[in-house]
Image (cartoon, rainbow, N blue to C red; front, side, top):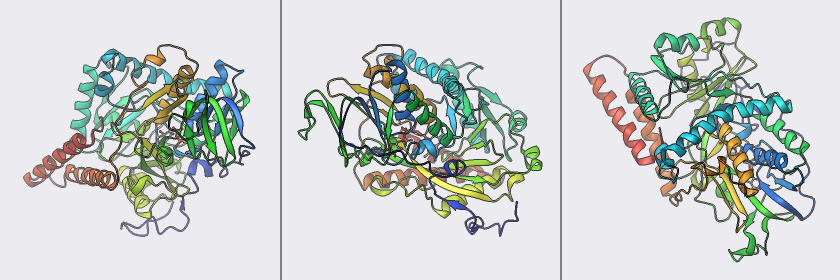
Length: 500
Ligand SMILES: Cc1cc2nc3c(=O)[nH]c(=O)nc-3n(C[C@H](O)[C@H](O)[C@H](O)COP(=O)(O)OP(=O)(O)OC[C@H]3O[C@@H](n4cnc5c(N)ncnc54)[C@H](O)[C@@H]3O)c2cc1C
């Protein structure tokens, strides 16, 4: 612990000891980036070629080899397994729907299909825990549920409205419950908490530990993972794009030669825009995190958080946090939302201003941690489709499949997506393959510069709405300010189509 340099904006970034980037704190806690597996040694044939070794690709490989051990499954990874969002995230294994009920409900399964997807996501949290236990993956999995806290009357009103909506969809107390101010603070003592929502369907993990353990488990089942092997193009069977896919096999092209396979699966989420032909499919949305030094027992006594729930708030530009197994608070938020031209970060380095802003949120919510040093800041990209609805797709004719677009809810959803993609590739029909996100299509993002201007404009609007919604005093001017904030937030939701 230390005394802040000042209360000013740059109090934390001036701390020379704060690491920035290095992929993520989660990897640093495991001793840094893992030793590299070999690159693809030569052109190869496979039954299934998976592009990208994040959770989506690794879960798909793991289940495919479990279902059909004889299949030759090759995973091609540009950097190392867990380099992307899967090794950098907030560690919420959340059953939250990665999309909009209304939009999924327009599919042939209607509202029942949406409920089936939500039920499948809830049981997926346990499936992740089951695999961790079965494979001996020490990923600090604790199923403590999730608390969404309201720190302003507007946030509280939003939570109540969201709860009423959930009840209409049939969610009972077993899915989500309201927390009074005291109940919320008893779980996690957040300053200014006015109440909250609790769902038991969420677990906390150390994400890099899960990615590393999952890669090893897929290899034990016989999948081959090649690292430092960027795929430069994915070509459908039959070469319908005229650029070389041959006969009955799809192709993943790399600098070391082609992998030809009956199925090639694109599991590159936030990096997808860099692949030819996919520039407008998924927007690489940036998210940043900071982690404190380990907090002393006195701070934990003040904060509570003995249930290891994951924690978020109901702001428009919301925060998310977990209590780590090594006694720190890891907290994230949007920061710079998007880089022009779908560019991605360099080794997770985030802007000092973003780290400062996250530090301010941390100090505001947890006065007991106000003097804790921030040890590390980092960022990463997650994939967002234009309609904010994730999908799992496979076209047997071209042999091309993909999953992603989880819009920030991919840790849990990628497991369900991986199991589903495995079944689609094997041509099996099941409850999973009839869920409404299977084959769901979203229109593409606008070309630049409209895409950059739209996303930055939206988050500027959300930040302003959050500021206005936080009452500064009880006067009538303050009420008007709050109303304007609520209206702006609503306008932002309508324009963006972000599901709430
Ligand atoms: C900071 C942050 C916090 C988040 N917090 C949460 C959270 O708490 N809970 C939650 O549910 N979700 C969260 N998310 C989102 C979640 O992490 C992702 O949705 C999920 O990890 C996506 O997994 P993936 O395997 O699809 O993609 P990734 O993990 O990004 O993996 C894609 C992989 O593909 C590789 N790749 C890319 N292009 C190529 C290519 N051309 N050739 C070969 N390989 C390639 C990349 O190197 C990468 O390893 C967060 C994301 C971020 C960035």
